[in-house]
View 1 (cartoon, rainbow, N blue to C red):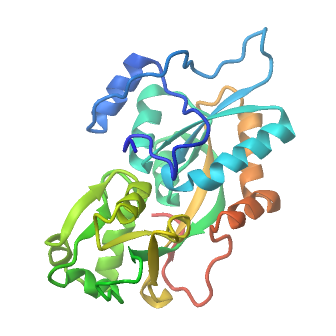
View 2 (cartoon, rainbow, N blue to C red; view 1 turned 90 degrees about the horizontal axis):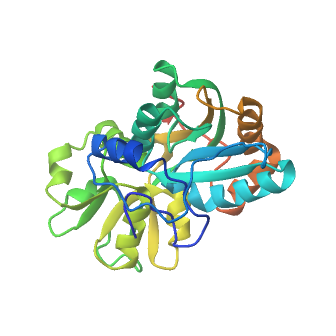
Amino acid sequence: MSSSATGAGNGGRRRWQPPAVVLSIALLAAGCQPAERPSGAAAPSSSSADPSPQLLLYCGAGIRPAADELVKAFEAKHGVTVQCDYDGSERLLARMKISGLGDVYMPGDAYYVEQAAKQGLVASQKNACYFVPVILVQKGNPKQIQSLADLTREGIDVGLGNPEVCAVGRTSIELFEKNRIPRDDVQKNVRFQSLTVNDLGNHIKLGRLDAVIVWDAMAAYFAESGDVVEIPLENNVISTVASGVLKSSEHPEAAAALVDFIASDEGKAIFRKHRYTTELPESNTGCKESD
């Protein structure tokens, strides 16, 4: 699975890619090489021959299982075409800034929407769901991992998200800080740093790692391959997922309608169908709306 546009599976809609020159610059700015552009891929447009709006959604890779269905439902309801760019939250933000293109941004943490807003890229935003970090281990939990502290034990092969690229990596650092676990004590066991949360689940599926920190919904997607070790709410850091209308949108009304749909009861029902958390867990003291 490609780390530059990883979904929770190989199926789903074809990802729109910006023009090759812009994409190359954006990807180099994100520290990676540009992927080959699919033949026939083109930027969303609205010509006289095709009057229906076409939107570009920048979407965190960890949201893809729900986002694919959200987009299909929205298209059927509103007659609007939505093309999706799935990737790590920070990489998407870099592409947005450099390309100046796009309609809606839905990363894996509201922090990134807030950062985009501070840079003048976001016109409005609404909360969509919550990401609850969990530890995903091999089926049967053969290493008997019971807590975050166990990730520092000798002989535990750990995978974490890259904090400079994806939301789950940034949140993992906050988890260790909150639980007073020295980062170096965990880092000595880290065998893999991912560009997306999806890659971490795949490494458990392939038997390459003993434990990874992922979102609850991603752990549910890989339920046949691994077991979940929950992190107590008082020790956890819950991420709010928000979507925002971009000021670069050529169709702001349609973009706002998509954000409204994502946050609606119908949208939340789709999130729940894919095991995403739509209500803030009770007794939680670690939720972060944004920084």
